[in-house]
Amino acid sequence: MTMPPTVRRGEELSVAWAEELVTSVHEARDSLLIEQAVCTAASGWGRYPGFSDPTVTRIGPLVFLQGMMRNDSGATKTIPQTIVTVPSNFIPRPAGVTVPLGGTVMFANQGSQASTGTTRTQINTLGEVSVVAMNGSSGAIIVANGWVSIQLVWSVL
Amino acid sequence: MSSYVPYLHPMDEIQEEWVESVQDSLRVITGIPFIREEMTLVSGWEPYGSGYASPQVMKFGQIVVMSGLAKATAAKTAPTNIGSISSSFWPRSGVSSPLGGRLIFMNLYTSAGTYRVDVTATGGVVLQAGTATIPVGGWVSVNGMWIS
Image (cartoon, rainbow over all chains, first blue to last red; front, top):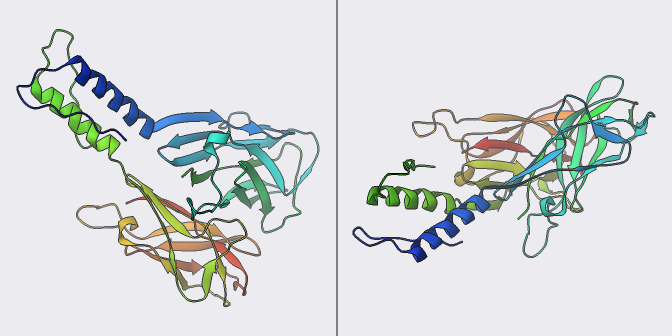
């Protein structure tokens, strides 16, 4: 990353110096919040009205997903279920030589069955955000108009 | 940011102090480090594998994210240590971090429900409370997020 240009006291400011400064400002912006996007909902899933869209925000290398999704299919859905897919530039990378600590990341969330339960939510290295279990069961049912929260954090590096 | 960039009035002449404050601010922003380390697991735990991220901590600026999945290689019952993280990531408490200290996170375990995982002020990661014994081959997630 380019460091901001230095200038000494008494030195006249040049156009080239100003251009370098602008470049540094742009890079500084890029190193912080540069990207935010709404994820693509899987078939039969939609945003729960009044709650957050399934949104990914990248701050530096960290990605924060927040959202609340509803089973809009009109029928029950059986877990495991892919709920949304994140855009390609937000996907965690698999473990490898350059990213030894990469891989699928799992978080606890909430969902509604007959009553509210704890869900196992994960994002894999294809960018698929899935609910893979509720209260430990992979065969649980999410009824029509039932909901799942999807809040996860991971790194793109 | 540790320094403040004063606004310029359109009629102001650019002062050296202003230029220096802009430069200082940019140095702070462009210098925000990102570090990432594997958690040191105690005996009886290992990374789960199978495509899941290893237990780890990452830090961007002062934001710390802990994540990963640990597998028990011996039966585990709370309270028991899972591992430790290095001092750069500790949720410190003290004069410089008066709001730091031990933290509690809700996490998942093999069969059903949740487990309490604590991160101590000196970087210990502890399976603190939960009703079930985690069997050999069972797993627990180690997620949390804090400011260090």
